[in-house]
Image 1 (cartoon, rainbow over the protein chains, first blue to last red):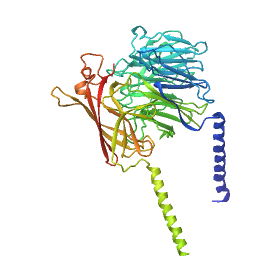
Image 2: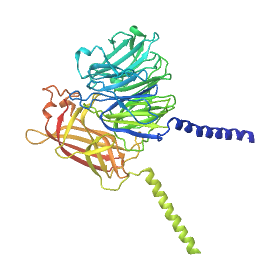
Image 3: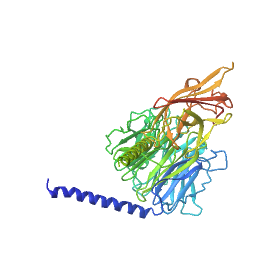
Length: 367
Length: 188
């Protein structure tokens, strides 16, 4: 080997070191004032926190009604427009009793919520006070708090109209699974679920969006997954088996395919690519101690998976690595979000073992 | 001169031992030679452990996403814990029982399960098992029972004083037991 041959790796290393020296500096410019690593921003909030999403720099968090549906409290909805500057979440009063299980923002001012009473709520912060629209659903007339919309996904169709999916079932997950679809100005309609399982719920829905209705997936009890075929009023569901017989709680979809997490006694992770003929593959790491996993979200370079008892794993190149919080964190985590734009990673959770859903926690990881 | 060399050698030896001790501590700071002892309680927020006192009410909860039971946590001393969590966490095996009293005053096993879990290091000595779930026997009480149904067998348990019993063993076979007499409430 000649000297030139040895110098190339040396230069490469130097370049790599230079780049790696610069990268944190860029990140720190964005996150001025934020200490790197995980921080516990909210602890033991009245309502459990169930979902966190970021859109156009605004962080949306929703969660439980600390009184169930029997008191004066309402479901939790928090918003922070400038999470890089400080921690300044503002509560939005929807005036609605019951839990909000999922939030899906479509802009920094508009978001869709799903939760108790089979509700889907459109929140518009562009007005003062915010406009709270409870959208008609097939469950509206029943006024039943135990019918729960566990997941909502909204995107924009080719014709520019809102395209919203809502999924759920009766509390407990043993019966009452439903899938509702709203296209444009039409109300939500029931969509037939091609399932031969006797009783089930559909836990979550996600798509590749936000500006496309492509590649929408749903997951539920008994390892069921469904893919949306077609668009608009013609959209239907196709069952795609996983071979699992336990719940898949959350699914995330991006250009590389879909990933879903779940499990009851032990956590499970399955993924698949974009090829329609491709099967779900169990990528759960070896080991018997992975707890039930409840939430997953992938950014460009990194994903995060969260679950019971404070479980949190980063996922890079298909390898799961336990996150070290740096502080005691044993509470169940239900939702998470990796924000590529800010570099911030979010996780939320609380006591999920019975109604009322209480004891919310909100965590943030800064670069 | 020889004495100085010996002192230096002894000092290096001590430093070496300290270094090894320190490294061992970093790898496993929650190992403890104390006699195992356990405490039943509940978690509040991220990590606050609230012990269960005799006569406290506990709720048989029905989780919206599936599962039912009395959800508790266990604080331990003397069992091997781990500072991190995840697939590398130390494991424990637990036998958890809910025990009532039948009409003749005898022990009535309402539920008896063997479950796994993880034990987390808290402050270098204590450990916490975040989830120790006491369940009811499905063959007797059903699974996914409906407490709002007056004919449901779980309804009769509402307000009864029961005993929660847990036996916990760590990876090294060290074990401890704990009991708590509590009042059972059925979530509505």
